[in-house]
Length: 143
Length: 143
View 1 (cartoon, rainbow over the protein chains, first blue to last red):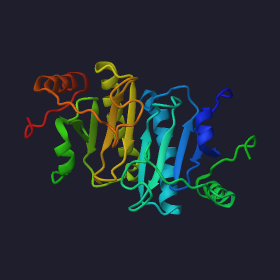
View 2: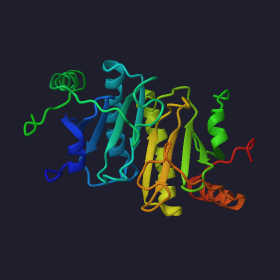
View 3: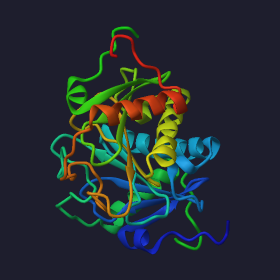
View 4: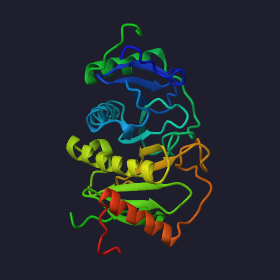
């Protein structure tokens, strides 16, 4: 599916980290919470319109990100959602949460107030850890 | 797992419709959108802490509800989430959405403003349709 392109709105809102076998891995630019977004390379827009096998595989990649957040970023709770009311391209939110975080206990969608930027060093640190721990692939056209 | 009990807050917020093999099926009392909640019988609180096999099975039941919403309730978009910041017991939201619905395009969590009640007839209609179309089981202790 070489014609696949990530929605421009997602690219505007996120840092592009790399990819797994099925999904592109983005990180929401708001650094106040670890907010990952997976974008599977598919034209299907609804998670539940994916057939069982690819849906299970995509969910497996989401589980890898969830474990990464818990094991390496120090957030024990995960908020997970497929919404897509504004950006129709299928994308999955995987957000680390903890008691007292800047949005707790509200969900982040449309609610998060505090906004922080990732430093280049922090962003590189997360990417390198994902490469080492989760076999993230860095895309050559997107260093 | 006979000791399993649905969280009282979920029961207070929802109508209890019945169950599938793994999950109890609830319907949020706010009738302004078709807002189903699945509660799998497990002590695990995080979707991604479930091992692959039961997680896939739970997601399959969520897909059944999503298809039901699309095929029988007339909503083509599904918002899906596992949040649990307030009620820690694992539960999955499956919400039918469409352009111009009372909350569009915001996600429903913490946002929905309009509140309507289900009539007994409407509730029974949905339950019967779920029994017929999706093999929902009515629990004898919860007629």
